[in-house]
Image (cartoon, rainbow, N blue to C red):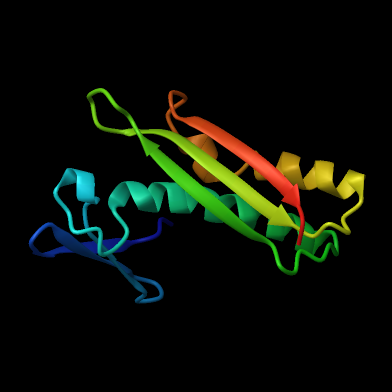
Length: 137
């Protein structure tokens, strides 16, 4: 069974997207460099956001199964658009900040799991993904 999301054009250049199972709503607005007001996530921002969220989620699933405490984990994501047509996401940089107390064996396992995130595996191979893990939390 698939997940259903409904979308509605709400005027200007904006959409309202509703996750049907939870009724959670996300509004989108194009980025400033593409005629938007930058007042919300753009569709390509959501792609980059999904990549960062997915890496942390897949690591959290692994951590829960293996009794690893990831308290304080967070990430920073930076999306880069192509400079030449066609307009597309050309690079996503993801920095994941993890607890510094994690032993090397857990760090290696978590980094490996993070690379198996379904969002990253669904991206076109032309999209450069740079992941950096920092053990500073």
